[in-house]
Amino acid sequence: MSFKYLLLFQLILLSVAHNQGKSVKLSKKQAHHKHHKSQKFLDSIMDVNDDSIELLLQKHENFYLAEMTVGTPDQKLTVLIDTGSPNLLLTSSLCQQNSCIQHGSYNPSLSTTSYYIEAIKLANGEVGNEIDIQFASGSVVGVFFEDRVCLNQYCVNNQFIVGIVEQTEDIFSQMKFDGILGLGRIKEAVVKNASYIHNLEYDTDTRNFSLYLSNSDDDDMSSELVLGGISQHLIAPGEEFKFFDVTSDNLWTINIKAVFLGDERIDDCNNCQGLIDSGTSFISFPVYAMEKFYQKFGVYQLCSNIESFPDLTFVLDRGIKFTLTGSQYFKRNTHALFSKDICIPYIKNNPIIGDELIVLGQPFLIHHYVWFDEDQSKIGIVKSKQQSHQ
Image (tube, rainbow, N blue to C red; front, top):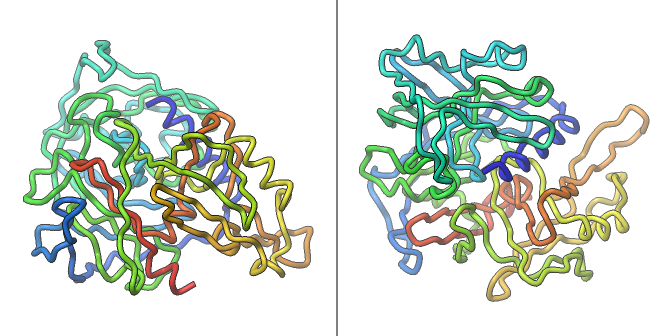
């Protein structure tokens, strides 16, 4: 787990440094699109009734957020939707540092349903009353609670919570959310059954979900998290899900056979893994791949010829390819020193990820609709309607 958070917050800090643009709040209007459900990955995706749970997400800068209530009576908090971690991590009122008090926080003393866990057996077999999570530029210390947690009307009465009681000041001072809702694989959780979606007392396949991230403020293209189903209207016309084996018990990873920048192969992988991570604002490559990327582009480009930039192509199992155009893996940015916009890559070097892990963060997810199947250990990927429009 410590690896995940090291990676997540290093890349979020990079996002804060490079993305200070105007925020966009997506519509919360309840949509009524027909949903479909995958009962098994080899089955046809079938029509379902109202069992699926659809949640529209907010976009703030490069963060995809959901509003959550915790405790009794309700305490409203905003959480980052993160497929790279499985735990519910919330800023706690027990933390009195500046980086804590400027956020919303969970106050267990105000909740009649809160239960403080003095000691618990963690997933690593150790027994403890707190956990120290190390990040790239600091750390947090968390203690353990159980309480009622709800997304809209969908509640878990005894949800496991890691409440932050101490943290490094500089990490969280710029964060625009109060915690992290982990949708990662269940086995990575701090304790067994810590996953919110696994604990939902609702008649749906809550271990399985789909995620669509949008850059659009169009109501019909709002970001969506669907528990137990998919929204068919978000799939590009004529496209179908392609399913891939999940290669890790702990993370949503799939095999990546090769990566091409135009006709040039930039990876050197024998067994590269791609981490599908909605909590990361970039695509992150190992150092050697980034050296090849920067040889081609440098740290920025003028945007006037962005349409001529080579495609970035990921080759997965069975030779199946998913491609991003130059305008999809670069971001336009106005710079005071230039008379024209400059384009900064959504791609970052991250030395802590090792030589065989590639993080497929938001730039990939924005253009692809993804189905996460815990039961079958499968990930389904399809070109999204948003990508077909661009």
